[in-house]
Figure 1 (cartoon, rainbow, N blue to C red):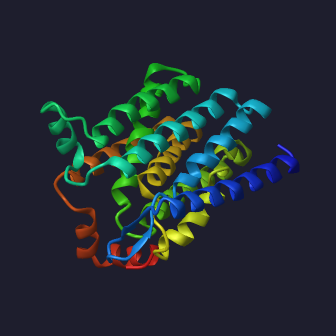
Figure 2 (tube, one colour; figure 1 turned 180 degrees about the horizontal axis):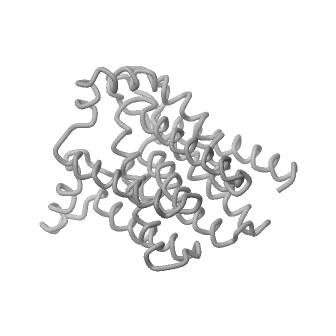
Amino acid sequence: MNHIDYIVLAVALIVFAAATAFVISHYGLRLPNFKGNKIPTIGGLSMLLFGEFAYAYIWFVHGIKTGSAAAFFLVTFSFGLLGLVDDLYGSRKVGGFRGHFGALRRGHLTTGAAKAIGGSVAALAAGFIGGRPSIFAIILAALLVGLAANTANLLDLRPGRSLFACLVGAAAIIAGLALHKAFDSGLLLYVALPLAIGLYVMDSRGKLMIGDVGSNIFGALIGLSVAYFCPWGVQLAVVIVLAVLQVWSEKHSITATIEANPVLRAIDRMTGVR
């Protein structure tokens, strides 16, 4: 990519961020946050719009690792759209895998169940079109994408918490790439970071919510990046850690656990307003 490409992407980022602000303002998309203050929701819509443009641009104009670009495009679109539907039409009366799939067994399809099913299909498709070398690698990539997206969603209960975790994950991936002298190969991850950082500044200050659309996308992109840029041993370790967290969160409150632990509470206070 050359400097013209970066100018195109920078202009697109500004345009789609402005479009998101217009949509939120025009349709009155504001909800009370944990303090009861009404603030703009679905700030992550900007990443759905910008991400689709950016990855399509890279995919069609430059063909940079075509399968990889297509996978990032698919993950951004599918997880962003599923998250947006959940933001606009979902109910918070049902939560967790057991709650959503329990409702499904009773004949009621919740947006959470639709997100889990649709996300699983999209994650498998992303692993496949990305040219993973084996069935094991495809399944591992799908697990990383799905579990990372859901983890980011679970963390998105206080300002800045979810995006902070995603940015820490991105920093770890970048450090690994730099250590192995493969920094340039991470372009598809780097594209999302400027917007993630900008949204984090506003989210952490309690100025907007990224919504499920934002947490879904950024979490899924981190998971996909682990699948593409990290050795399989690291991928497997991350899957195990995230899977344990999902099981644990079915019976425990992440926020209550953080508040009960002085170290976790201190770290959490640094990620955003409380």
